[in-house]
Image 1 (cartoon, rainbow, N blue to C red):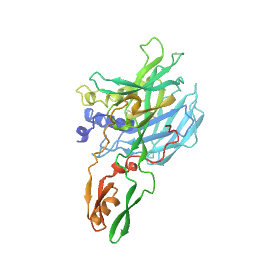
Image 2 (image 1 turned 90 degrees about the vertical axis):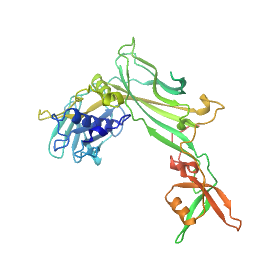
Image 3 (image 1 turned 45 degrees about the horizontal axis):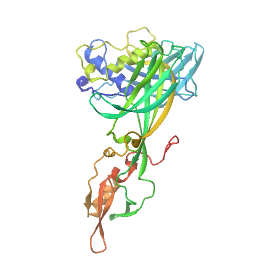
Image 4 (image 1 turned 180 degrees about the horizontal axis):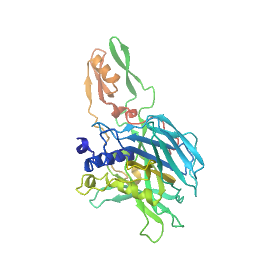
Length: 397
């Protein structure tokens, strides 16, 4: 059975929800038949006070041992507003639904998610309201040292709600960093003939020395102020970057998004987060099936994994350079080792170039007017192996 193959560590929310289904199937095999026709509906649905096209993901637990969720296709989705107006959603790719118009969640309004699957089953959420809107006061980087002596940089958040109504916070981030190919050369290898297969070196046709890579957070980051004297978040670390982390080698930027949740959503994410820790995922004392706020309308005991969340969002970006915290110190090691190899066979070389496996590192003079090319792993001389050569619109030097 595939239960024992659950991965430990960090998950995206969708993967975590699916992991819960698998784990529940392992610990409560008589309560739910994830291997049969009654697979579990998994819902990832959030709307916010951002004016945008909102997105909802639907899937089903796998009916085989592939451990992959099956997109729930051809469903009808709508969000009902105060039991009157509604926002409809359209499937844009299997299991991914987007609102037909842009909208932003408003205060003092009840929102309900309604789902009708292709087999005619109806599901709905309990009413949810937009929590207090609270802005991030500051996002900043600060030098830190862990208890074990590891040096690095914390990305910290400050926030304050004078009304005291926010209390429950969830954080996500998107980080972008500059990549500089450490062994870039002015020329690149280009295939000039297919028959026979052959290459030569020419000046680069585009920027391949400096690029920008982007990654999103993949864990659930929560905090609350329930035990504090005021609703204030101070110096809360949402990201730790070790001194030797390659991504801070040059210039680094992070966009932190703060979501204010209601208590129900916070407690749901708190329970889901427990499943992402190696200590709890396979502990002897497993929590029961995590109940969200989405249920079948026929009153049956069918389980649905997921939650319909309405949250208020604030975001802020910060930048820093490696030298800001570690001046005159050696940069972290490049993400790849860069051994150099001479490849005298032009057809073999052309195949490596065509497969985008190598970049030009140098030449060896054959002594008869010809050269043997020296190559290295592609990323060492071509930054587009790791990111885009177009600077993001928000980028600042």
